[in-house]
Length: 206
Image 1: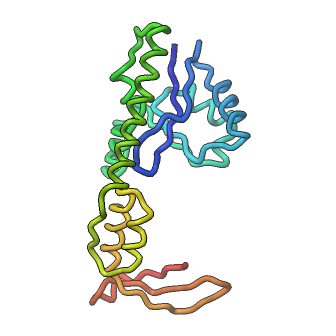
Image 2: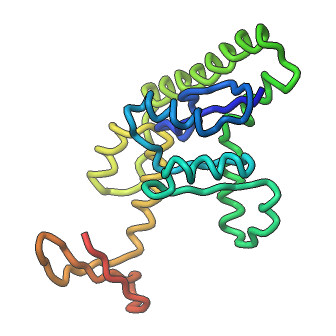
Image 3: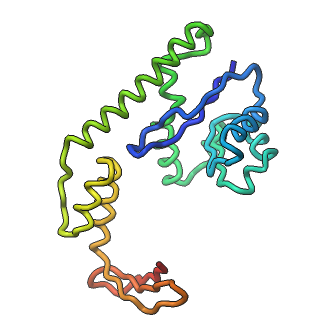
């Protein structure tokens, strides 16, 4: 029976199981319809799948493609993706994929009775990792690398993982100089360029 998992990425950049389904056959249309009902009609912003054409067609029929971003990574199409950055991003997505995690506990020969037990183990193991991250965030102090007051404030609010990403962006931003050009209809327009270098110059609207 096809096993389909709906996952989300939490504030530690971990894949967390949101919902799942066992299908008698590949009735993706029924599955998406049921999922949308459970979510009070709210559609996902992005669908990333390595499934076959059936999943692609279902997304199109549900008209999700008109209101959300959609990417389909079919295995037999990976060889045509020559952009290095795109391939690297795909590899990163696969590393945090919940399907990959399930394979340590389940396979195509798992019986239904064993599946239920193993499924609980998967969920418990994932939430153990979340609790571990929670503990580390609450009981460790972030190392500040700039003199910005904002960095200190953000360190108190963000998880350790997200703070590190923010901190890197903050450090990189110090390479740039910004000059406000004008304010129009509540939009602030800035001219931004690298320190001691006038080109290239970027126009940023905030």
